Image (cartoon, rainbow, N blue to C red; front, side, top):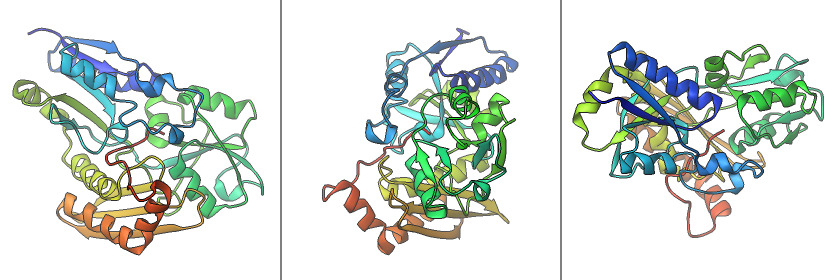
Length: 314
């Protein structure tokens, strides 16, 4: 069999993820090659991602390589993938999920509650910013871009009193020494799909799909499908803070979700239980729209409505 070629972004975390999947495939006897592909999102380093508004900014170039046959599969952070996948592609596997929550990192403070009034906290995620502003409106929130190492260096140099990162990313990289608090979802609802990896292939590649089947985790697939259904129902635009966390509880799916104004002055929450992942996500999304989410979306996007299927890397 020819080597399987994996396409990946070039960041430290993306390469960890690609090498992790490569190692699991090598254990099954596959020869693996990894091709680094630079995406639009990687090239834009001096602008807050929420101001870019490019659909699939961390995936388009990788999907182009997949469509052209330069690679056989792509490894993505699931939260980077637009909620609507082009017909040319399919998600062959969603791997077992790391902790999907966010983490408070700091040199001198044990948690968000301990930050002094006017404390400086770094994050470029509107989802995180909105929830921080709702919980601690006194904090100074500053933009923070770059890979995990860059963000942690900025924290250590004293630019910030604290920063917010995804638990999954720092766990995978072994960079947990400055993690002080895993933030409860009640305070900071995670991004849809956070903590899960998606393996994308060309549609109809049944042979490769069979080879990748062992990577697919049923719980991760059900929970993330639920979260992405909610995201899609709400429009999924990167200008609107949306959080979603689905979990299996006693054999049923439980979904918690939020949609908020970017300034944190209005934060809507909803939750429910169900057995069908898509139906549950859409139902909670519909209720959030009716309870004021539609007005928030209209205010942000205008009467033309949101750009469907857009997600944002954090």
